[in-house]
Amino acid sequence: MGYLNMVKKWVFPLAITSLVCILLLATSFHMGIVSSLHTTNSIYSLFPSRVMTNQSSPYFVKTKIKQASPPPAGPSIPKFAYLISGSKGDLEKLWRTLQALYHPRNYYVVHLDLESPPEERLELASRVEKDPIFAKVGNVYMNPKANMITYRGPTMVSNTLHSCAILLKRHKDWDWFINLSASDYPLVTQDDLLHTFSSLKRELNFIEHTSHLA
Image 1 (spheres, rainbow, N blue to C red):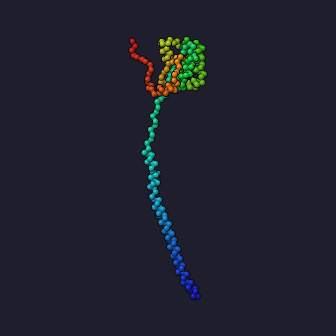
Image 2: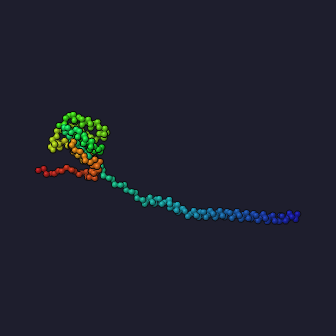
Image 3: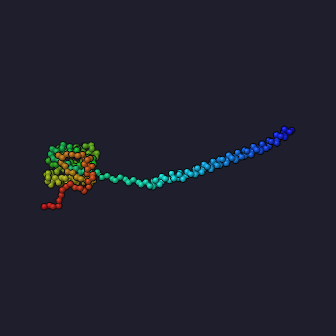
């Protein structure tokens, strides 16, 4: 009985002491968690301003960037209107000149005068009609009227004006009219010629004229 009384005396204080220790440990653990969360929140509170700055900085950058102005437009490429005239025996030379001068951007009128035989005029008309490129682009025409031409005379001027009228009836967007004979042959390509004339004013005229009639 004495032994049991001794055990009862120290078991109760031990239980109380253990309970107090557990409560102290639990309280300490809880306070540590709260302190850690508070510290973490304090650290994160330093970053929102940077995040907001990074989010807003593209807006300010975009407003400061000036839109680049479009490059200036280059000079427009001109268009030529050609008259290629020939006489008796000039069919092959006229066709050669037409082939050398041809460019899909330009317009062409070919003409064989009244001295050329009908067979040559019919052959020229057939070649123009059957040529696949000419037929597809549609920029080569034949003057169907075989005019009597006196070179360096008024009939030559009349034939030139007639050919201009044929072109103007179909197209009005050409810039210069060039009058050639079947014996002429180009020394430069049409691409080079178009590039050179693209920088010239369209009102530039190469015809010498005067108002003095006498």
